[in-house]
Image (spheres, rainbow, N blue to C red):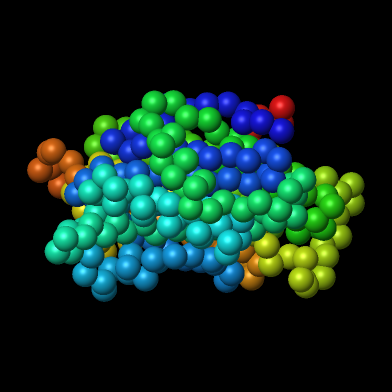
Length: 301
């Protein structure tokens, strides 16, 4: 399988880079935000695997991050963040701590260990490769980067799963415009706004499996980006509205067997005009839902 399509990107000064291993059916995706950003996140899944998320809590002092890693490989894939940190530090991007530069790179993973012909997982070299590929130009979507080994529709049995993927979308207009990126590896089916299934179980008469060791291997990872002057508490709230986009586009969503995480990053805006947080929240929900649907929209090639 190969990437399905491409997308212009997130905009607002954000760069995206993928590393893809089609043999191992895994990969990672790096998002490099503009300087001066404010970041936070919302965790709704019961089985997350992550790094540096506590720093995104509004009660913590630091506000800016220097990279974000979304990766396959389960807990092993978190090692790719070491490469992202190294790549940024070599370019003096990060918090200054005496003679050292310390980049902050939150990371979250999906489980994709069963699908490939090999058992490779993303590591530091793959994280560096994703950074080297990062661009504000159009990027591939679908079965690429962190979405390479993603699957959906596993609630009726793993043998009936369908490919998931990585999608990008936007919602809103002018000052309330929001971008979103989603890596879709859910227990549930992806559904359209009218409830019809876009990608889900292929079982002809599905009977859900009993929960067990076969199911706790799923996650939707999402990112909401805006250009607005927001504080950390407001960005945290925006991430919760992004999580609502998972709720409306996955059925069932946020199960005990999912590790859903939604990040939000606000790039600084040149205008002093106050942001309409309620409008941004509505757009965040719509953008994440659209990114999830976009991840599975085209047939595999």
